Length: 147
Image 1: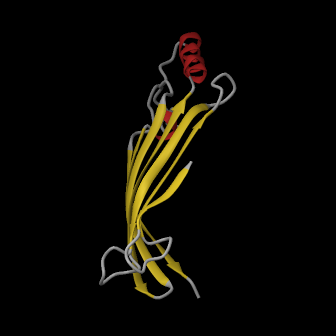
Image 2: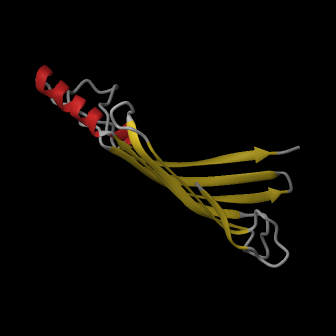
């Protein structure tokens, strides 16, 4: 795991400037759905002098489905004689901008793209055999009020 401030503007605190974060995890593939996971990103906080409380961030997330699970999926396809997607990985990217409206109130629009949601699983809402959940684009916003 890494959580590091790369740059601090003059007079800034530990949460201002350019911040880098990341995590990596590995697990035995013979007993875990996911045998490798990594995420990370960078946050630019308070770098616009006229907007010192705003922040912009980008991040990614990668989850690898173990080869044992993929083998199980292939065996299921073989013995059921029905097409089905084989799980492999999920990958997502996100970008967001936190806007300080007034002290204590922020609005944070975001954009994300998810490749192979759930690791490339069968779509439970579609009865067509082999139909996987499609890649997703997400656009949204959050608002936080602290009082």
